[in-house]
Every structure is written in C-alpha cells, then in structure tokens.
Image 1 (cartoon, protein in one colour):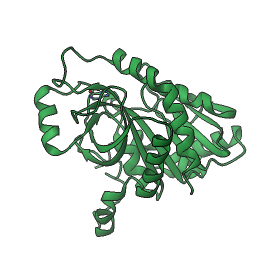
Image 2 (cartoon, rainbow, N blue to C red):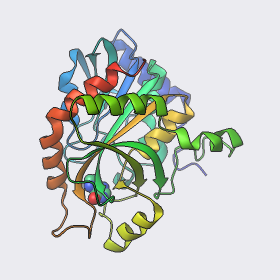
Image 3 (cartoon, protein in one colour):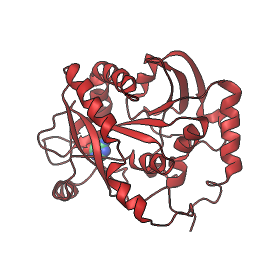
Image 4 (cartoon, rainbow, N blue to C red):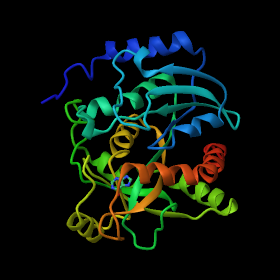
Length: 280
Ligand code: HPA
C-alpha cells in the first residue's frame, strides 16, 4: 500500500528539480541535512542562493520551531554544497516517503554525498551533553521506510550493505578531523523513534539493552533513501541531553536548541573539515 500515491510520481520530482534549476545554475556535489538548532551552520557557506521550500513543488513544509524550510546553495571549502534546512519528521504527520523527498531532490540535482546531522538524546552513559557522535549504525524503531510502496523488494545485496549505510572511510577521516580540532567526538548507534513524545524511562532502558548509544526522531528515513540512491553518507549527532531517566529533571525542546547553540562554533569548524575530507 502506498501512503501517498503522488510521492513516487516522477513528474512531481521533475517539477521540483526544474523549480530549483531556474534559480540555481549549478549542481551541488554534497548535501548537508541540518538538524534541530543547527540551521545556522548554513551561514558558513559563501555565495549563497536560497530557495524557500514554499517555491518547490511537492516539497514538505516543516511545522516545528527551529526548522524553517529552505535549501541554501553555496560554496563551502571549495565544494559546491546544498544545505537542507528545516527537515520534516514522521511525527509531523507526513508519510515517510515525503520526508525523504528532499533527499531524492538533492540527488536528482547532482549531489553524490550527504552529511546528515541531528540532535539526539544520549543513551550511552559516558556521553555528556555536547558530545558529538559519528553514527556507525542505526536501529529503526519507527519501523518505517521510504522504500515502502516504491516497488523495492528485500534483496540480499541490500542486507549485506546494511552495516555500511554510513561510509566507514569518510567516518574514519571525520574522526581524525575532530581529534585535530580537539573536539570530543565518539562513535555510536542511533535509534530512530517516531516521537513526538520523548521516550519513557522504560523505553530508554530497552533501547540501552538493544545497543543504542543515542536516540532521536529523524535521520534514518533520509539515510535509507540516500543509500537506495547510491549516495555516500556520513552521520553526525549532537548529544543535547541525557535520554529520559538517565539524569534528573525533565526534557524540553528549548534545552535541545540551547545545547545545539552552545556547540555550534565547534560544530561549524568540524563540518568544514568533514566537507574537506569527503573525497580524499
Ligand atoms: N529523545 C529523542 N529525540 C531527541 C532527544 C531525546 O532525548 N534529544 C534530542 N532529540
């Protein structure tokens, strides 16, 4: 069953590509998907052209604070990039296929690499707020995929590739960049939950047993889509808070935005470095 029959309509994607190409005369090499509170990373780019989501046919509009929807095209470290600002989440009510539409768009525009960022709750007890985590694997705890309804069938090649949704070579180089910058960067497994509720303490305990190091409400649909389209992916989480039950106090979205803001300087330098080492 397709949750939205227009999602895989090539004409919709073609119209989106045409709308962007009317405004931007060059092809991006890399896409950077910006998570909660990280939208300002796009300010690092030079010679930017902004395309608001509202001007792109079929593009999903975010409803969450800190997620204004736009594509920012520009140059970063001599690389032509597109920042995807204002991602949408499954909890906003969009079909998962729609959530992955920006990835299909940037791929169709030419991007072969994707750096995906997010804010996440820390499950690994050695992760403090502000820790940066390179994603080396994920748990799909929303049990959803943009491949559903796309005519894909389970195949062995896909299963074999499942451990390398996140490019090991780019991740290794990225880790060295972080080290050189003196940043606290770790590796770990990201669990994707539906939201919008933060997890219960019981869920966090369960996720810990399942091997998750961090938990959040995004990223996996974009990564599944990028992988399907043959893109090379690097995943980076900012741990903005201990997951529910792992520290005193209650969680709120403002805290997430505040910690994202605090680490932004270091993250900006890191992201530049990650772009620089993408192709080595
Ligand atoms: N849980 C889920 N998503 C999140 C969290 C969290 O604790 N922090 C930031 N995004």
